[in-house]
View 1 (tube, rainbow, N blue to C red):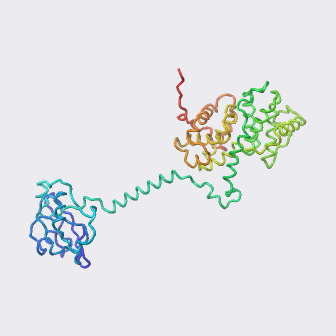
View 2: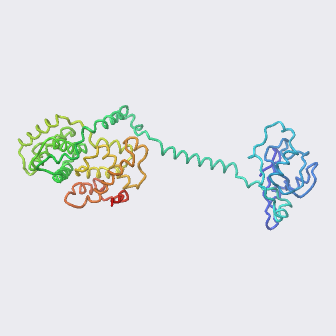
View 3: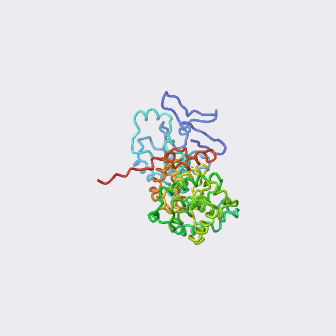
Length: 435
């Protein structure tokens, strides 16, 4: 505590009640203890007891005390006694017209009288300790910490602007990218097929479809084609098989032609027909490839511009603020879904969102699906859990069985060994069977 004026600052240290040592001794030769100052005050009945100190500013210019202040004899300080003092005696008459002092400005102890030990130990020269209250610095620091915590909570609940950093990139199409993806979401139903279309095929089944797509994923990888090409290839195959019955010996030809059309739509450098014939071990002729190409285009009415899961993957990964590891694992999981016929019941946008959600949970644990992801995908965490649990099952069995093309592809350094990530078993909840 510092009681000072401009010319002679006096600093008083708290007095220790143990050992009888006085820390209120003067710091400089011309400084005096508080008991001496109180003793020399004019109009004061000398006594060894400390006075009740008001934390308000003193009216006198000397900054010490008013000489006309009458200091009462020491008695146990209680809330009731302090209130009586405030009513009966006002040591600052010039402040009578000012607003009342707030409770925070006056230090009053609770209705607990001082013990005898405290009376005798502190009666000699120890003033009433004022350090029991929290300092203004501590209160300010706590308030700032609360404000920071509230800001963190607010930021977590805020939907981030994921396109703000691409404002100067003309290829990002920031001005109408939201409209584009709203249109994709509206049109994705036209790219979906019936999840039970295979019942209308008399010579092929879903197992044959899985073998074909697993093989095409390897072909796609060896030709180093774009990711868009693979997703469009699978989409063309399903849409064609939904409308056209095919015998099993022509199923591989359907897959090759679908990849040829996807390359013509997505790639800059398109594989030639002879290359496709070669990888099929010359099972088909050039004429058969071209005839199947015409049949497929006419069956699909030349409709190639449909949103696949890839366009949603790129957007949703941006919303998830993904790094390379999360991106590779997400594509690994969704390519596992391409092989499985049962995943046709989910729209492309949900497959993409569920693959990213599962990848987040696999790498970082639960609770990673942010408000930004939910806003841009249109799916909450609860809506994705069913699809995500199925994906976890595919991930767990990716390296087993005969269809391991996706696992071998992502078990290389080029794809960051994404297939080696531990499966998120904690997402799979056992549902009790009805009795």
